[in-house]
Length: 291
Image (cartoon, rainbow, N blue to C red; front, side, top):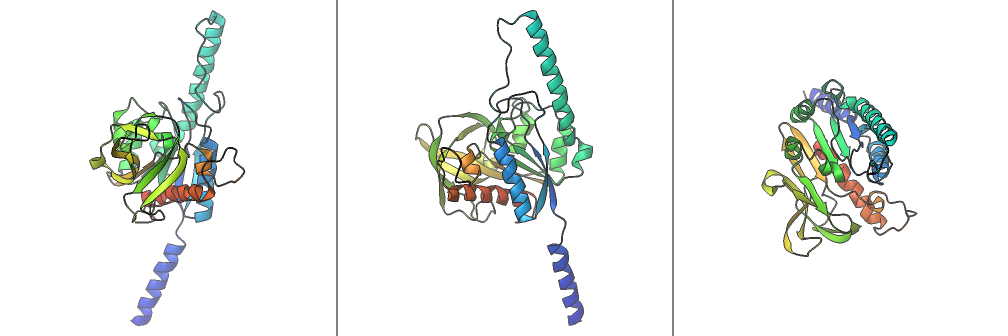
């Protein structure tokens, strides 16, 4: 009997060790402001997947036709009729291209994935079935939102409810001290009681209620006014049978990437590596890889 138990235990361990990696779909499309750091976020997620071996990543990326950074071009107030027609046709073609790449978020295609990452997405994305997307998360899948994921779908209240908050505004980039609200969560386990970031763009939120989420990182001072209070930075939550992890951090390339050659670096490599582990731990939690 003891031998049989040993065999069963060894089989269970072997099965666990050789379990197929989870599959993540990373979405980095934008219809509003486009962060210059998006390629850095994409590269970080690829490296986290490769180095951990716990998950793989596929991408839904921006089709050509819009600027790589900043806001999309607007029609000039004094545009000629020909310019207006050309602009309208160009925007229509681009929107059609975006809708094609976002077909990967259809309920049928999402069956191939365990979770979705919104990597600094912005604006209203023409995903094929909004309710079907939320139902898929609610059915037991993972949603990971990085930085501007909260600056997405402002006209869709159900999205903000799923995420747990909605971007309101930000001020100048500042140094902040983030307090660790749950050292047992994989996203925070490597951090001390507090974590100081030398410089980052810090979001303020609307439609955020701390009783509806599980805070991971907060500030006790407003990053612009210095007023004391409760200011969210990162959180997680259940959404039906699914799990949601969100971090508002991820604007600056030198926070995301530890490369010492990054120009005008303000955050040292240790801060960058802590951020990478923060994101990795959040992914692991949302996918159920770590409790």
